[in-house]
Length: 286
Image 1: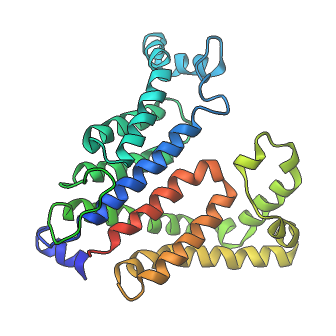
Image 2: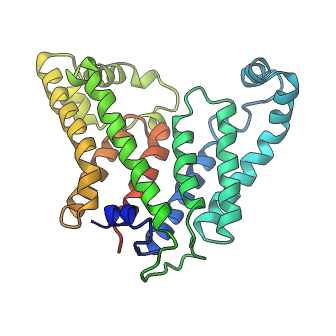
């Protein structure tokens, strides 16, 4: 298996540099979408004078640093979105990547739950270690060690994300029992018409709400089975992605799983699902 050969050879195992170049395009595209969404739903006015965001920033950072953040916030939104688009198109990819990472890191200063940003910074930093990010939309092929180290890092990060997530779910009795998912869907079914921007925040299909949107014993049993499938998938996917014979099936399963995740929280999970699926390109050496 190429991954273990790369580890034992001190990352001198040749891989296809196009694998990381594809991920660079996907990473830039996902970040462009995330940064574009940040302009809407009050994001542009997050730190407007007298706003709650400005008040919280002052309390958290102090008047001087909060003032600097408020001054740079709107220009940074524009610059980072342009940088992400530039990265996706492969125009000066390394400087564009630095702009994207700096723009993403800015969100650590004000987001309450910045897990998606931490994941963005982790996967983006892997690209910094790539020796050949490519130029433009052209994908280079041929054996090379330029991206082997970065590719192994991406595999390790994705494996850690999946296995850590599975471990947390296994430790949660409420998730394993199916009650957590059943309560989530039931609550959404009951209040969805009252939620602002609900079409962008949630996308649970109507047939799921009709047939598994209550808290009956049957519904909870269905969600218990779904929870077991998710935990199993998160454990099995990383090794299955590394084996050429099982990789196509693992990719299909991963796409299906992340599509289901994204239905629960489209706006919040678009970054996580998009980047995780993008890392699948790193699991093959050729």
